[in-house]
Structures are given as C-alpha cells and as structure tokens.
Length: 240
Image 1 (cartoon, helix red, strand yellow):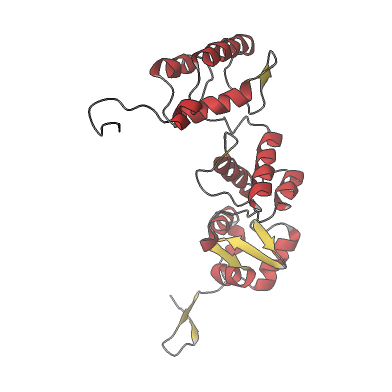
Image 2 (cartoon, one colour):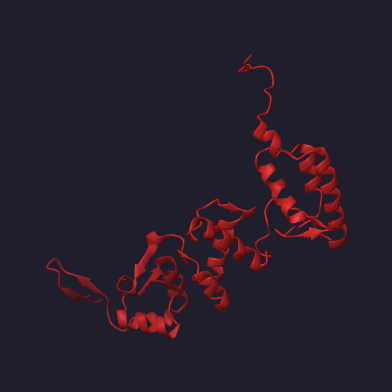
C-alpha cells in the first residue's frame, strides 16, 4: 500500500534516518562537548579536535551536516547554540593553516585540480570561503612566501577567482598606459601588482591592478596631456 500524498505524515526514507543523530550518540557526545567547553572556555571546534579520546572535530562536522539537512530538532539546536563559541561554520580566522591547506590538497588530489567552486564544503570545511580568504591575504601582500609557494604548487591553482578580469602584460600595460617593459620590470622587481603565472605567461587581475594603482598614485603622475584618437585614427594631444 502506497503512502498518501497529503494528510498523514510520511515515513522518513532510510537515507535520512541513517543520517540523523541517535539519542544515545547525542547524549554522550554533547556531554563531552560540554566538558570541553567548560575547560577550554569555548565550544569552538577545529576539524581535528579530540577530547577524552573522542573525535569532537569529526562529530562537529557530522552534526553540522545533519543540521544542513534539517535533521536536528529545535531542542538539539538550542543545546548547541547555548554553548559559548559554538558556530555552524568553522571560524576561518582561527583555523590553522595546516588544516586548511590539507583540506585543499585532499580536494585537489580527489578532483585533479585545486579549482574550488562557490559553496564547496569539503570534509566539513567551507573550502571556497577559506580559499577566498587566502586570496585576499595574498593580494594584501600579507601571505607568507612559503605558504604562497605551497599554494602555487597545487595543480590548477589560481590566485584570482574571476578569470574574466585576467589580462596579460601587454593588456595591462595598455590599460594603465605604461609600456610592457615597465610592467615587466615591476613584476621582476616585485613592486608591481600581484599576478600569477601559467607557463611563461604572467596574468593580472584588473580589480587587483585598480587597487594597486590607488595605492601608488606617484607612479601615474601626468607629465603630458592625455591623448585622444581622431576620426582618422591618429593620436592627437588635447589642449586645455
């Protein structure tokens, strides 16, 4: 006999029942989490947090996954949210570098590329958000060289998320009205805008270049009137 489409509550499919947290598991794990919170002062968990021989980090990932599927009760949600420091996401500001890079390496090994689409959760970590944070730190010039090298060694890694804004050296030179030789010299000196390299070609993100220009206005002091293009295609000097 088939179940009705409306009216009576349907029996949950086996896949959902398997994903839910049993009462016994919940009671035991929550007691350990409360003990951890009391002694540590926070319920914030990292992916590999272990306490009293129990893998709290793995349990936290599981609970977050169950929550995302809507399988935690209101009471269970309230019990967790009552703990100081509990969040439904990892705090990327305090997430250890080794944890983030390990997750990205694992992701790259699985898919063959370190290209992380938006809303990617990998082993319980919001990997796309971690990658975005790392890119931001890099463009601000605050990412340690060894960490930048570690990321750059991953297959398919890109420093800039939106390749629609990526320009070659010649294109950037035309965009900022400098010679390609000057742009290349800046790159070699390490004084130019952040870039990444694929093969022998350097690429620049237009938005990063714009921010860099605003921070280095002295490099763009106008020493001659700007040029315009006539109807015949000839460059002419504009006079005031």
